[in-house]
Image (cartoon, rainbow, N blue to C red):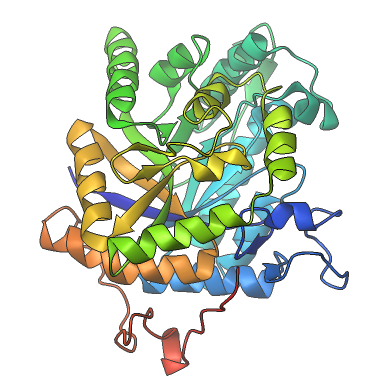
Length: 401
């Protein structure tokens, strides 16, 4: 079982601070407005292309593209980026409640042909009623998962290449069909920590994703989903969503984490915690419980830091340490059964290089990586900085906060 490494496309904005999104009143879409935080980067296609190209050069298999009010549309953004990359796959997040399952199946098939087979799907059921209602979805938490179950059964049914009928509580489909099914079928990723989510994963998905909890909690989740899948006669693979902050020395990595923490004033943390505390997502509540809104004891497990979750929803933990230490933690999660590591870091361009040139060689030396296409060659690292971007132009790491 090899490790699969994936990176992240910050389609809601990026920067050198954990509060980058708060700098935008418009969600980071416009570039021409002044912002109170320096070093904030709008998610324009040119910048996202830099990250995608860097991820491909560094040997990442895919990039996760999020979904939500403050993000650019994941389908449109990533299909554009397929035209400036060659082998990078795109893990497209989308909400099943706001699109027809037959249309989604057709979109996936078209995407596979345009990209020559580079689509992966991340199904996001949704844990925030306020966010769901912005898109016209008024179902409660558990009913959303029941609908996702029906949605995925229909998608797989119409990918069969023959007319497919389905009569459920949420969908009525007669003769549903994808005339040209996708080839290969996209792998389906899915996450959810509630009792309503587990059976959906067991019956339908290829990869179950968990956020970055301590290893023992992750092991318990794996055992839970694996047991449910066995009852369905299925096998589910596992992945984890984490941030990373890796440097040549542990001291430098933790110093960088400290600088990120210094940007978070008490008012910002309190406002974020109040908003996140309203989430119906069981996974989000588990993330909040890791730190309890306090800056004290944020290293909740060796090299696992919960500081990001003070202000960021969703994935709120980071692997922090030297390249070897971060590789140790990845190897530990891998020993539990985790195959897919969906990673990110602030800013996403620079941190992709720190991880790709620091941790990836450590994992390769331990025999954890599949012997697929090697990362493209660049200029070697020097003086503690990541190596150059493709073409030999130096990759400049901005100073400051």
